Image (cartoon, rainbow, N blue to C red; front, side):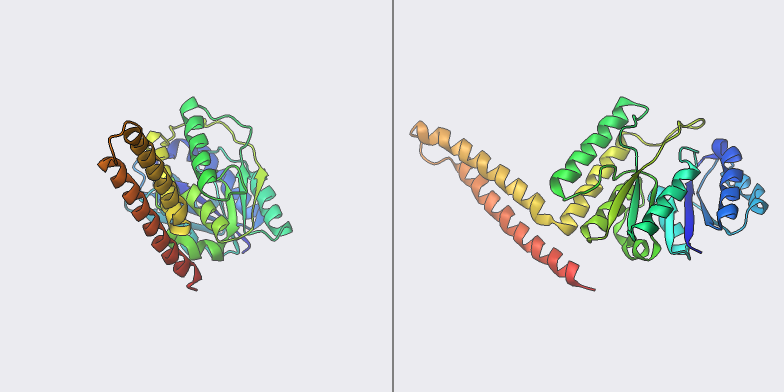
Length: 290
């Protein structure tokens, strides 16, 4: 099969009753594999999935006994996929099936490795989410060379073989969407974007909040440290050095000699720089291991 449609489900019983028959019919009509992951739901999601088992072919069901997280659910599905490509969509009905076909055709036409469904220009439901996503994009773009805009889009299609290769680098939480894109980009795979439309959530409540933004921020720092550690170490080193010099100049101007605090900051900045060189060498060795 050419495409697996991966749908992580956690407490989406309110949406699955109407969404599930549609996606199963869509998969049957296009001969796509549908992989549903019930990620330890406690609201009847599993019973709704089982009720619709006979409404589509090429269907795989994965049940997690406990909730592993958004990324953990997708990783289980990718490991079980037998297709050339995988695409992830949400179980709340926000993604359109026509966009699945659009991204599928684009990845074939461009011989790309990943196509991101871009929501650029579409507003989020709350100011908090817009602000969080903007900060995440700013941090990622500052620290890494990124050619795409919407790295945290939940709709992405990519080569299954490559995704399986990088699963160990991706987190189990909501940060999965950002990290899988950054991993593909930093490994010099062809990553493109294609505009998609997002429908408003009709039922249920999103689990994305401040904790999700903080988790994503930390995971981005981790992946930057893995691929380009010097960017973080050098930034910290320069800040420490400039602070130390600025602190010491005040004492020198007043004729008070060399400040101990200033000297310590400058020495620490040098040590951080040297640690960055070591980290960069380790990262280089890791990148060259096949």
